Length: 374
Image 1 (spheres, rainbow, N blue to C red):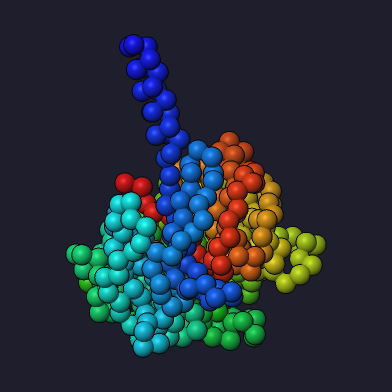
Image 2 (cartoon, helix red, strand yellow):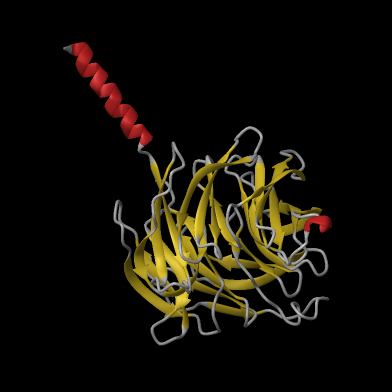
């Protein structure tokens, strides 16, 4: 009898382990076939890579980007409010719940935002307004609500590409590992504008800038886990610029710019969309829209420089966004124009991507945000 009980207990433990899942929040804006706009929820089986069919968690207009608070208890979305003003909304996330509870929303007051992020303590939130050329800051209340805007800074300048860089176009905002500086890649000026910020008040103070190559059009960036390197994705010239980062000074020093797509493979109009550093710090991934691939690179742990590994087809169209799950096992790609989310296994030794065979319908997905693991 003891052997039988032990056997059943072993099977129970194995089944529980195999059921380990990650929750993914998906922003779906302007679906083409009558589906509701909003934030959707899906689960990823961390053992098999199988993804569930996304279901509506919160109906909201134009959720252009999502950000989870570091503790995972709140989720934020830049959106269009009920009065048609651009804004940012806060949601409570409950353990095991399939829907989100809206807490409040605040107008941005300077056009629509294309990006949202929180600081590393969950006390402040930042938005980037591509069209109006500004970055904004909002303190967050103790309960996670968005408070009145604390800062709005207008960028200035232009770039050599007259059709895309006629004015500043801040595309994102990232807080550095020290939680003292905010980096804002500006596609219109080729600058990564650096602000010093106070997480207690949400105030922003101009500090300096790094530079992408002229005409490159910086879009998004990520820091290496060691805090010594940063990587900027250049949308227009399809490249990644690696920087050495001094966290004490908030200073970026360019080390290398490497192409995500060679000239001889740009048969159709292509541009970059998203960049991610693997949790191990060993690999970097970048998405090529038009070519519809993910480019993989190895990261030299001593120098921060990149070496090309491969490009993998996404099994869809227009990878607007992608993300790596918190364990580093799987990579999910949002195919905006193919209405799909496809799943790839990450070779954690070589960095290569292997299509898992798992793919689900997801109307016009534009952002994937994993729920932080507690």
